Every structure is written in structure tokens, then in C-alpha cells.
Image (cartoon, rainbow, N blue to C red; front, side):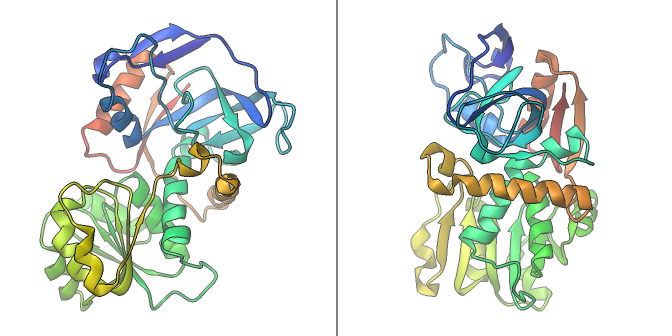
Length: 331
């Protein structure tokens, strides 16, 4: 079967090669891939490659397709089911014709929503869901109108769905956006207030009549905003992030007794935790939300054709760092 992989840290190293089609065992599904999405984690993973690889590394952590075969212990899916998922960082990704994936982190694909709109959403939705409902411990069934969340990089992939989920949970949402197009985008998704992360966030938030916020999500480089984060977070508030801290010091949050949390969507599958099935549950809810119109897909660019040229172009687009929403390749 056809697969695409990288052999070093350069985008030019992407290559097409033949790989043996694998047979599913246990709780694995073998899925014929019909669509993928490009995520920053793909770029970050490639850039960590130090030495030239003899076997290309297959990236890709969003997938949509048809179940081709099932393992002997599979309970929830059968051959022919349409599914979508974000994947497992310890295994080959979705840049291939067929992918093995544990059924516990898979969901039935939306029935009324297109491939391209669906496949844009798994990784970012899982990340945003775990951030909001596990790390910030927000209960979406409670009255959360007295809670405020600041989402830094609101127009990005994770930010675009985090805004929607926080809005649906009833929180007051402040999102950052830097251009008029992105401001309109985050407002459409449910942001109540918008500030520009290229300017002083403290001054802008205070000008909105808000001294401190209950929660902050750091969805881009935290270091340039660290002093703003420390100042704006409420005592006993929570700061959660998906990116690294290189220069900032967590101890700066101590005097406010701020809760701090990392979010890495692949943790549950990497360590084979019993909780990994929650990812399948989140995605089943996502499918319902997309089909009902409660959740809007954040896809903004689609490449047609699962080939080397489109993988390189889509990767370069995401790597440029100016994307609003998500980039998808449809087979």
C-alpha cells in the first residue's frame, strides 16, 4: 500500500513509499483513509528528528475513513463503518492508505457532515475538551455565567473549537485575535470579547472592565505573554497550556495559588490508560454536534488528492504559522 513519510527534519524529505498492509488484532481497526488534517504536532514531530532515518516516519494525527478489517476483540465497530479519530502518537499516523487504530479512541463519523469538515476536528476537539472539562474541571451542565476564560490564540485550530465549547458551557469567553478577519472569525464562533495579542493584554482586558479571569488557556508561545498571564489570572484560578515553557517560571503563579496543567492529547493512548475510551466518547459527541449544527467545523482550506505534492503544500501552509482554522487533505 501507499504511504508518505519523512526521513529528516526538512519538509523536502517527505517521500512516497510502499508499506505492507497490516492485519488488525485485539481491539484494533484497520481503516482505509479517505481524509486527513495537518496539525502543528506534525511539524513539531518532524523537527525533532536529529539523524537521517532509514525508514520514513509516517506522521498524521487526524483521520477519516472506512473500517476495512477488525481485530478479534473489537466491540463497537464493524467492517464498512465510517469513522474518524485523532490517533496514537506511538504508532504510524494517517499519512498512509490504511491505518491501524485502537477502537477506544475512534468514533462513528458524522452522518450529515462532509469528510473535509469532519476530519478537521478530532485532534483539536479532544485537546480542547480535555483542557476545558478535565484540566479546568468545567462542568458544562452547571451555570457557568459567572466564569470567564481567556483563550490566547483564539483563531488557531484548538482555539477555534475551545471558543465554541466554552461558549456552549456558558462561560464568558475572551479570545485573542490580531486581524479584522480573525476577529470576525472568533466572534462568529462564540467569543464574547476579543483582544489583540500583539498589544498589551493587561491593559485591554482591564479596559473591558475585567480585573482578573478565572481561567487562561495558553495555545501559543507562552513566554511573550507570561507577565500578562500572571497578572490577569485570578487567585486560585487555573492556567492550562498545550505548549512548552522555555523561559517562564511556574513559581510566578505560587502567590496566587494558581492551578497549573499541561495538556497533551496523546497521553491516554501512549500509556494505555483506562481513560483512553473517553476520547472515543468525546468524538461521538463531536459527531452529533457537527450533524446538529451545534458545533461548526473550523476547516478553512482543503486540498483535493492524497499525494506527495499536497502533503508538502499543506504542511508548508500550517508551518508558516498564520493559519486561521484547519487545513485538510481529502483523498
